[in-house]
Length: 592
Image (tube, rainbow, N blue to C red; front, side, top):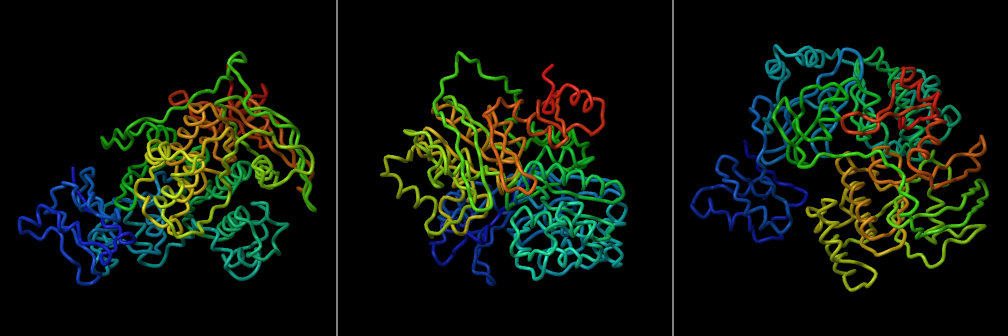
């Protein structure tokens, strides 16, 4: 085992503390310079050779800015990039295929986007030497005799044509011009690319007027319109509904038939369908990331779920993730806790009709369907935020609501927010501290100002605050947004456990099939009822398999259960199993 010391510079405030890390370090007290002050930044520098891994500085730091980690033994020759002496380090790189799609799967903050930038030639690897520029000759010498040598030689000669689909597509809204002009700036024909992603009718719209899903489709269209040797795609499913995710997957699979494609994705069902093989990335957020050797796609995801990488003898998950086939609850054990009548809402350009239904005690129901079909409107009506035009939300139901879009407006930290709510009888502070903080991995961000939290951190904090309020009905709108695969699965299990334990009910609006499969007992299905999208309807709740069958019948996709893990897997179109399930009308999985 190796040991590394990480200083999170965004959390370290040396002028606001007493340098507890240095004062309490036993090695410093023995007269050795294990922790010294950097003359450039004024922050501490922790000597890794002298550090004994006692962890005292980690616990004494008032800002949780230090991590001392035992890591799998990795030779210095495998360090690809390092950000500072006590900064993040990336080990190994994925190997772009000559043709086909390779996936990159791992937690946030472990170097996946850094790897894409290096492979695209946008950032030169420093090979662990963070102090000075590293020449192309040195990079080539490091990778001489490996499969990556030819790749870096093409970068050094300026011969590699690489295009990157950025992770944060919301920044595209700040670009000037229309959709068509932005796509055309990729250097190719905009028309066919916009047709492929379904944006031809919006080609003349200004970028600033697009929704998140439309910005994602615009970024993918520009990628398709660009002629390149290597296509690097960072999180193509964010902001997209389940229908568009599967349609875009088909488009990218066609691209991979002739081109080299590398995809970073957290939707495991989508990545399983997209890629031929995958590299797993394991490590610790903002500390280090190790990229595994390539694995066949089924093996890669099953290994990721079990948490044990046999080839490297590394365990990166303490408990395996397990799926179930969701048999319907026996009628004798069902006790309805929430019964809602038919509801309608009419806007000037959109109308929604939702049929009546009921939720049993301890039942979690997912809400699925294309974007702009009324899912959020339905949840807002139940929450009392949006008054229905017809019908009345169920009386006497206590509701806890987590909205779709989050914005931290107060500078308080999560801990300060907790202390302010501690005296509120409608808030369970003990549940928050005992179950939700460790379950959603909030320990490290309790003292960070909420406006400074990332999208995923703010999402986890908002869900925790919502679940800590005792309620009959929990309404969580897109709780998996901005989360990586590990965080999504942890949240799915926690939400399901809390709802069952408290005997409450929950509606979850989401698009991730794995998340829904882990968290939900049933589904409500929303769909457009007019070709122009001016009306939508919602029906259910249905048992999980029936609800997915209703949704997938319109998407022309069938799922099966993996024999080893019981996770949902998309069938190859036209395969024997795909044809058999279509003939039976079993689109989610065949129960026989």
